[in-house]
Image (cartoon, rainbow, N blue to C red; front, side, top):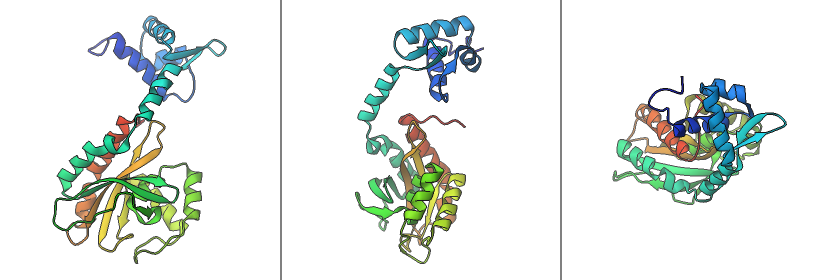
Length: 258
């Protein structure tokens, strides 16, 4: 039972109720909330009464259902007002840089391009450096694939058919069909890859950063020079990259349903 154990304080139970309502697709009936939280009926009723009186939960008299209240929305708005992806992600970027010794990049998507927002440079004498504020097409970058692969399917298709597919190297994707296939691979693997598609000498992998809606708002990449880092070595860093991107996502409100 959720009423017992080390996390049985009223605060922990209140957080459990709020989290359950936050994850729900729409309003929740009282009986469903009790079943999902495994709280006793009396405890659930007491907590809902407190949260409702404080404006953190809204009760609909007509449908007899609960949802998150406006006070939670106001707090969320304050968080987003002060949100700075560069600052939030810097700890994880430095960690990846220390683990790999390679360039770590942060980017966002702007229509059909990515924009490099931040980087932690490799401490090695020869390195692949992306200029902050520079743009690159999403079709030839791992960051672009990571940022696009988790958008709604219709939006992915629109983007794929709007791209110009400028040929940057012999490995650059040349059409929408191939690009969409690579997006599917990105979703399956958890990271996107630029396999010498933007520059012949550069290979990178990138993982998406999600916001509280589960939509990609940024992406993190490890960028390497092909003569120094074998492809297998780069791919072996993928779990750490994905974990770092997930950590950033959770800082900005993302809840992993898996």
